[in-house]
Length: 187
Image 1 (cartoon, helix red, strand yellow):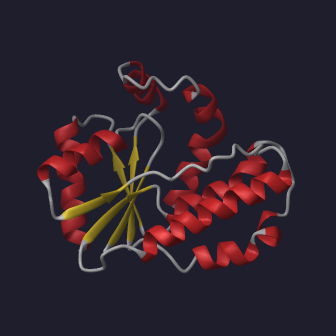
Image 2 (tube, rainbow, N blue to C red):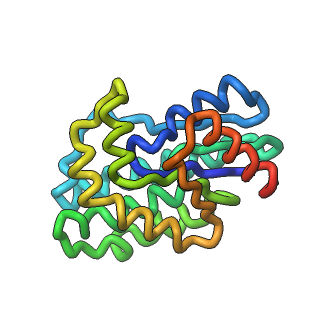
């Protein structure tokens, strides 16, 4: 089964995946992307398309190589790449025809979907608090909150396969137990 893990920055996705690695060897964790040697200017339409083709191809390959007999937890699944690809230009004020220019790629990506999506959520105030205590201290968290947070939450909450988990009042063990319970119930 393929399970996507989504949520805003500083919500606890990395903490959760680390706990799963330690506590539950029955779930394979798949994180991140391989970055290209070239840095693309994402505010240039053609470079954005080239960049997204690389990421879409990587995500498809990731899904193709999963062990179907196991539970696979993917941090930022195919649905995330789709959202980012379609949303980024709008968030920057561009009116690019993304679905026209990347139509074949998005159609192919659409063949790779998660059985369900775990969306970890918390209020902006809590995310700010968690970020302040995180060693990574994401300096662009405010920009991300203003440009992405609500749109991403709305997008994922509208997908039938999304399971929203409010982590606001949970410690890391409670988040882990809640996620394992959802996985057990969905499996």
